[in-house]
Length: 184
Image (cartoon, rainbow, N blue to C red):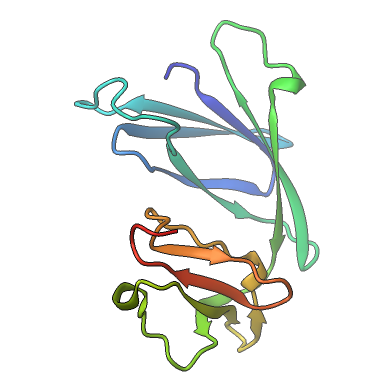
């Protein structure tokens, strides 16, 4: 992994930290601040003891945590430009760059809570072998006590897709399906 990715953002978008999401990789970074932009160069290297080709398929290598500054309204959109910097070569053309747009809403969220829309939430799928659907609503609770339904912005992800699945119900709360292992 010799070509480090570069992250370019306007002032007010600050890279706070990076975390490696793979036991095989180490992630280091440095930030250069200019008059208009900050540029973060991220260096990904293989950990000692990690064998080349040990992982199969695509790898989720790192997580980047950003902080947004200079809010002029309750909601603002910021762009982050990504490109891979090959040393000794000309800068990448615009067609080789990736742009991420982040819409940031200024709220002090204290908690995000799932609310089961059923009084009985016992998972009987394991006992009966039948799929159980439980409607769930996700709400955020702000520091000032405000409550907002965030169900439309929530994703369900599981390392074992046979155990937990999410079905989108048209115009209804999210439904989380509990499925017995080995069935679909």
